[in-house]
Amino acid sequence: MFVLGVNRAYLYAHPERELNPEEQARYDDAVEQRATGMPSQYITGHQEFWGLDFLVAPAVLIPRPETEHVVETVLELVREGDVQSGARLRLVDIGTGSGCIVLALANELPTAELYATDISADALEIARANAARLQLANRVQFLQCDVLGPVANPDNRGPSTRTGVLAQEDSVEFRDLDVVVSNPPYVAYREADKVQKSVREFEPLNAVFAGIDGLDVISRIVEQALIALKAGGWLVVEIGYSMRDEVLELLRPAIWDDIRVVPDLQGIPRVIACRRK
Image (cartoon, rainbow, N blue to C red; front, side, top):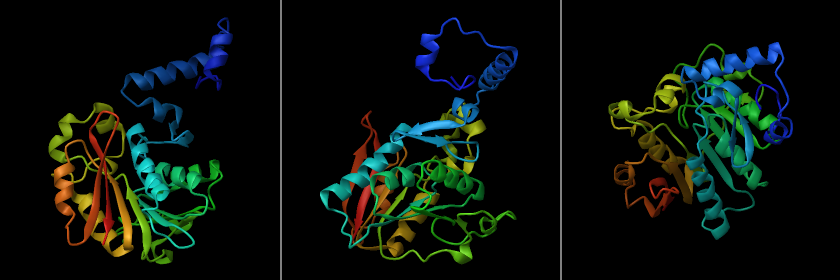
């Protein structure tokens, strides 16, 4: 399908179709790349998420099906009226990567005011390309940030040179948000040996690992979301398979309530949502 640029139905309908030398060479090259362990999504450059087609490259984490629970959780909060907003819901997606979460939400919430941050300028370039392809470029404001704050050492190709990505000095001040959402890096370095080889060797490590215990980024998100959210606003975060108790300990009862733990389809705690008092 990738080499010929056709769908599955075409392959079944034309079993007699033979590859010409150029197509055969491209097919052989793709198979050789896959044999090294490179994820097929990086070879084809595409991954489906929430029924949308996303461009992916080694600069961004490959969207996973379980991350759709993050989108579902936000939409359920909106549907149930738990997200109290005025004329317009305001939301930021931290560590947007390919943009899969914020663009899925943009597709579902046509009147929302949406922001997306990432520390990587390369990731933001891919996210913006996805926004353009999905005709959602005017719906999301992309900013290069470290969580919600300034980047200590932005690269020399800073986002101010890239159309549609704001430099930190041009960025908005995150206050009075209705929702802060994130699929952050959460794998502990001590558990690196449990991570699939293809992830360790091909996906961006800063989007996978987060310190000795895996809480380095999540703890900062909790701290900064407290400032960014308005009273009654929601924090929705994806977590690792064994992190439920550790993340709940970060949520002080004096500040957060209505804490919800959402399992994935295997029953593993996958998303934590909580409301700022």
